[in-house]
Length: 285
Ligand code: C2E
Ligand code: MG
Ligand code: MG
Ligand code: MG
Image (tube, protein in one colour):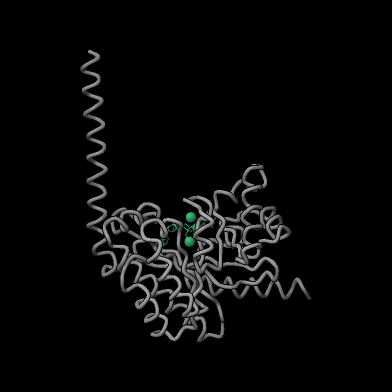
């Protein structure tokens, strides 16, 4: 009986792995047509300067609404798009939309910058620097209005190649942020080698910032590291006034999170910017 049970369990296990592989394969297939079927859109999450309380720009975040399954979380489909290679064309599409948006804001007199997530797979492409520069040229965007968010995994495969490309982008005036800082294979060596200007404290350290002493110390350490290496620190996932207050008095310069706003559709983002700034003027009057 024990044997039978083991056998059953084993079959069940195989069945679920099998299902997972099939789901993955199906998702890969669905991603192939997602761009042309217009299933993607971008939402913009405001980034706030904690000293001036002004919006400095936004992070562009990709959304996929699948025709049958509805909303699919980026944490679910981006890793699959990375292994299948779809992230290259998807990333290009995101960059283009983001640049177009910045140009529209600029035309409306709003000098906001945009932060775009750049996958390690995209950074490995030979034409990536050329593609990015062509995109900002096409929309006539001042390079300083574009920030690329990269994660620590970008440095893991071919650090020399990554350094060279980031230097080219930096020399062109584009700024680079290390996303999810502290969650990957952090090394201070690459921070020295990389032309990086911003460190983003991962939201997992912000969530319990005022509850968990370890998280407080980690956040403090990243803020101090930023100060000594002359890097601007940005906290992500700020959800409460207490967190905002703590980060502000601790000297963290920038923040984003649900406390200010969730990621917004372009029209809602523009409305948000207007009312947010109108409220500051009112409060200071
Ligand atoms: P990320 O770049 O670290 O983005 C921050 C994530 O935190 C976003 O999740 C955002 O919606 C979420 N967030 C913002 N404020 C809060 C908050 O106050 N509380 C909580 N709990 N969450 C908050 P999202 O949009 O689901 O994206 C997840 C990840 O998917 C991103 O993490 C990024 O790694 C990746 N991703 C999203 N869009 C793109 C893209 O266009 N290209 C690439 N390569 N990756 C992307
Ligand atoms: Mg990001
Ligand atoms: Mg992040
Ligand atoms: Mg993250």
